[in-house]
Image 1 (tube, rainbow over the protein chains, first blue to last red):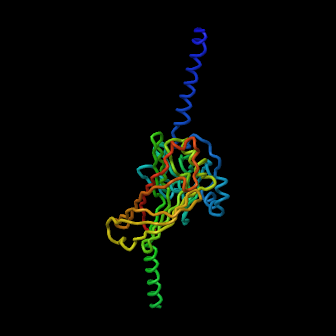
Image 2: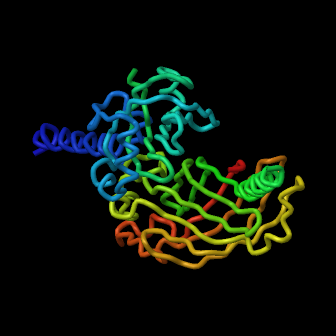
Image 3: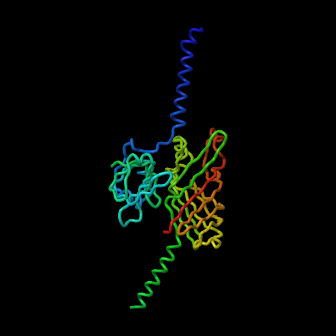
Length: 141
Length: 182
């Protein structure tokens, strides 16, 4: 009897405890990712095309792009650095709206961009207000 | 000819006057906080679009639910998928006005107390709210701050009974806006 407990039950308990520990650590308390740098884009589009899809029919565009990783190509209009994040604003000349891309500071430091650059940026599409909004962005090139 | 130029100048200056009265921001910060002994919930949204009209006191906010960032990924997932249903209802907004706008001098630097009232729409449910805050004028920049409480239940946000006691019944919402002239 004692032998059985030692052989099966104790290792069993340790195993279950480990499973619970890793579940809690890596699932329940998992920290939000700060960048999509390592993930593949679901869509690759020109900035102007992405914007016009939202301008034409927001609902259709939401159904297609919301929560997806979108890679946009376009011209950087300006870069804003605040204490919490960095925003790269991609906008065509003469337009009043564009694509607002929010970066985690560390990711932007790894690979950034500046005003006037032609860039490809990927991020998670959160929706459309005055601009199309991409979060957790990373510069592709 | 001369009168035409003068009238054109007049119209232009009028246009400038009108447009100068509206201030906007695309990177306003709204965050909420709620705590129980078991759980602390905090999420930040730094992409709030807001406008303030200095002459009428009209105030508007619109934000994307998906732009709220939580520290924990699972919490953010539950918030979006189960509680706020952000795929179905991606936005929340507020439309209202500064009731005591006549007491705020947007041309003079200073900090003014503000009383705001209007309709807040979250999760597709609209409620009339009032809140106190401050407006700070400094040069051509306006910052506005306010804090108020909301009850998720009022907005038809269903929290399953199994986690009901872990999530605060009331959330404190903090609004921090830095406007620039439009």
